[in-house]
Amino acid sequence: MNIFKKATLSVALIGSVLLGGCESGLQVDPRQSIDASGALNTPDAVDAALNSVYARLRSVRNYGRDLLALSDALADVGQTTSNSGRLISENNNQPNAHFQAGFWQNSYYAINEANLIIDGLPGVQGASAAQLARWEGEAKFLRALYYFDLVKVYSYIPTAIFQGGVIDQGGIPLVTEGVITSGAAFNRQPARASINEVYDQIYKDLEDAKRLLTSRGVQYASSGAASALLSRVALYKGDWTKAVSESTLALSSSVGTVLSGNAYVTGWRAAINPESMFEVRFALAEESIGVNESLQSSYTALLNLTNKNSQGGWGDFIPNATVRGFFGLTQLQTGTPASDNNNWDVNRNSDIRAQLYTTGNTVRGAGRQIECTKFLSKSGFAYADNVPVIRKSEMHLNRAEANYRLGNTDLALSELNAFKALRGLSAVTLSGQALLDEILLERFKEFAFEGHRFFDLKRNGRAIVKTTPVVNVQFDDFRILPPLPQREVDGNPNLNQNRGY
Image 1: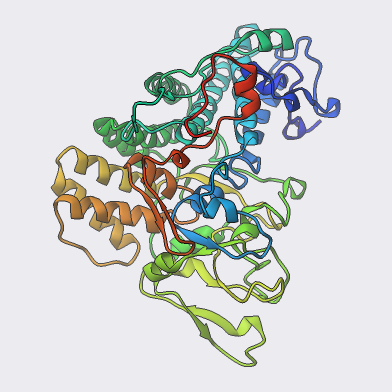
Image 2 (image 1 turned 90 degrees about the vertical axis):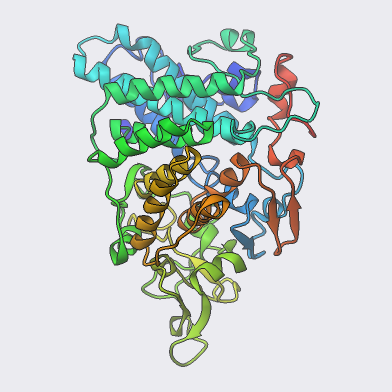
């Protein structure tokens, strides 16, 4: 059996019941399981288990859609179109319209699998030292990534914590040992660890990953990717010196390439983005998320750029006036008849990132709207684009911001201007708050439709302000955090719910 198709391990799929009992955690398809007896005793079994942890990143609730599209819908990046009705409530920032229980469940499934792999490594027969190091390093990188995604969603971020006299929400449950029986899962009822404890565990896992890993492709964890992720984590933690040092290590690694000019645009058209330091891979057509909830379908009604009249997705979430203004985007008729969608494009300014936007089509009644084309069948089949989780260009912006926070304003300005040159923009002369605002603005432009903006606002304690729809969510509003899944709270007396829910 192809190990990439062994999506789950029966020993691991106790799932989120380790946190109090979501019933779907017990719904295991036996055709996707292998015998629990001795499941982690051989190298092939460990590889299969590890591939399962990677595979869970493809979930719609994780990098398949929500960590990008839903995050940006919550933020001030775009507006919904009502084409399919998806993401409207999130874009309106309605109470309970936030990350769903499936994100929590799938992430803790993966963490339990990673824990079981780490726990079981001493008993693997016939493994070399290099294999053991790789398995441990990759499992710890993945555990760190899942924990980081969970804590940044469900908790406040260390650089901006709202404390209004309410019960401390804290971080998230932190478990580093796997469970293999439902009894053990139900008996373990962990409280929420502190935010700092969760970040400390993420640090520890990533430092181990750096030490243990080399590189075997950007679809797998590597030492360079671990430094890159640690740079991001340190930025969120407010550990500015660490953010500078890790971003520097990541930039010096052989993993990923910083692109500029037209190469940056063509990088987004390649199946594997050359900028990727770590990306979620969709290798087979049957892994396609489909026309309803994929990133391609969420962002554009196009099937491809070859023929804009071909029926594609829904185009549910498109750039708002702010993003259109960044890139000078307005509709442009390029030929006749006007009814042919191929005779339409957009006016653009000199920012190379403007090339990643164009007009869609009218096939689904979408109104030939201006859409983002970062995800457009680049893997060779529809609705299954590989997803860059960490791009190397981010390291420049991380380092610029961290240097600013350290008071190294000359270094911050120099790095910002060097980055602007990569995108075809003129240098600026700024200092003080204006310099920080410009760095954050470049992050906004660079990572539009990649899911960063909501968390950049959150970690800076800034309000979410939109004009379409009209929204003003101040940082002290309870809607900044989602509710913990109610079944988890009901089943675990030690697990306190976020305020307002």
